[in-house]
Length: 501
Image (tube, rainbow, N blue to C red; front, side, top):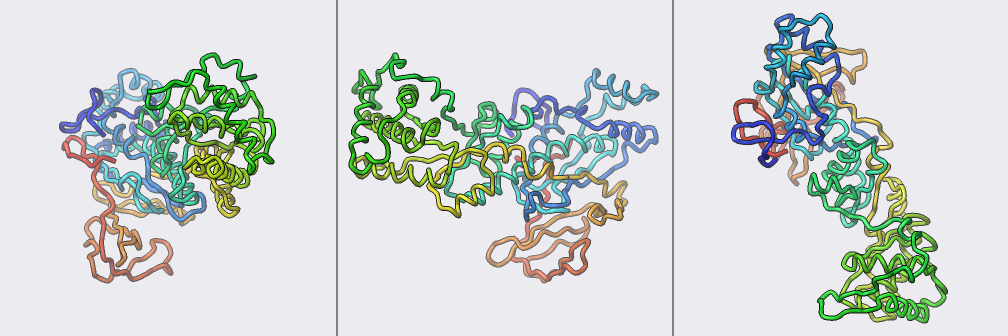
């Protein structure tokens, strides 16, 4: 977080408000305000409390979660202040509440609050606190709903992105294409941000690119291709070479010359005969507009009999003037088969027409992709270099929510517990410290929790680790490195220079 012109101060730092201006103290459940009033009425509002924010089960049937949303929580804390208009509305929602409570709300901020958290982007596990929030119970209670809102979806979509990265592999580019399918504007912006955090390389979302500096990717749609009727519609046919030294006065004719060469190539002549000329016109027009970044959507009509040959003709024409086309996008059909056929076609062009590097054109695939379809493509064998993923990624289609909770674990130095017949809903009392223990090869072995005043685990010392709810799950561990997980990210008016989430 860099200092900004607007926002609240933390020592010498100035922190902007949350990305979404709708994230205010009123982004809350009514019962948070009813409890705040009841705490105040009972004289308990300044009692020192400790709350843990955690989740109970890894999403998507998996074994890990990626923690996200911390930065937005810190921005919310730094700018927590109810306006007079908001206070008037709260008073309307609490009939019979005393005027003095409004005075209390006017003076309310987070200067007495402390937040300790696991660094954003970390791999985390159930029951271990992601955040520990300490402060007067009246104000901390008002942080519950906003914090859960900011962390739940962020962590869910970051985890979903990480899972897609795992199945795709490190060498493939992953592009987030979900803005049009996301749950509203905030769903789109948040998904772009946290998919990037979860391992994606770029987004199609221009607003997210501006807000967060995420690389942008995109080419054209089927509408652009089908909008053309013929090459006669191309008015400006001039293309200046990449080095600026020469000019092609009729790039359209140059493209058509290359198409004929491809048609008469011995190894390619049997694949296609006549291509769709309106598609050729669209590709040519687009290349004239973006000669440095030409990438074509090739499945509007017929991929192998029209799209690929037309793309190659335009790419070869660009090559003559010092430009390197980027590649193609496939948005329908048998993606494994078509990607292999396209790669074979490119390699044949490189070999037959003596164009070095042409066989390495980027093949991008889209069309309702998800973990399962990418895994299936891997098993079939494919030549896809990049995946454009939207709906299943940004909506987290296979799981609606992560299910983070915010539980009181201590008040006035007294441990508190929430009991339940459902053991998964029993909270773990007291203020805790969390550690990650590493083995000889540097890999993490286990995360453990201890009471705040218990001695921390030591390197080289044998330690018995027990599951909090399953007595049969226990193991001795000899850690070779110990990492304390919770770090201070907000210390109110103390002005601590906190680490950047």
